[in-house]
Length: 294
Image (cartoon, rainbow, N blue to C red; front, side):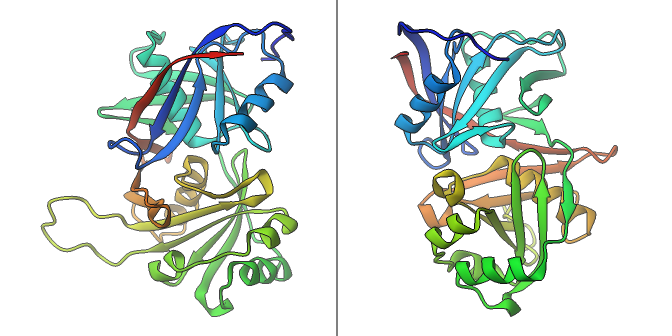
């Protein structure tokens, strides 16, 4: 999916979507250029820096017959092979703009990591988490990251390197308050060069609660790609789920909360089906619709 260069700008359909929320402005915003044809990588990157959102996507005709549409995903600092909230937000925008999937059961997105299946779980969309590689980081690196986060070593239960396209160092902390009170040294994290996801598990929710309570509190720090803290992160939640469910820290279905410290109320719905496939879901809301000159 490599578009040809274009020297003349033209009006292109554009929308801004809030992802992992049913309430506008409480999730993670995503800029979507609904027709990225003819734009080269430099133009895409320039626009992504200008929007200054955690991600900006460009929809393209697919190159594979199985795919319904193609997408390229950019942060202010570079291109990503895959990311979760851009996947759900781009699919939401594509469907809202009249996109018609070739299958009734799933929508198929083509991105740099390959084909990603997305299913409709009304009122949510959910993507099939790509396979994750889990490794144990060396203790010296974990110690540097823990120091940059302002944590004590005793607050960290486990650490894993998680790679499902994007690479995260995942830290499971002792309690949600430890996650919520973090005040990281972002320049130090940027110098270390690792994106870091921190999470902690809540106790059992009250019996008979009317609204399902989150089981996991999550924060994502991505200073190496120009984002100090990402409001709600699908790729990180996907890899956390694959790790924490496999190691029996969490059940096969749960809700993760993210964005609390940024005055957001992101909710990520996780389900591991009978085949072992993890699905990562959330609602999306379109906030801006119009045209952009690119």
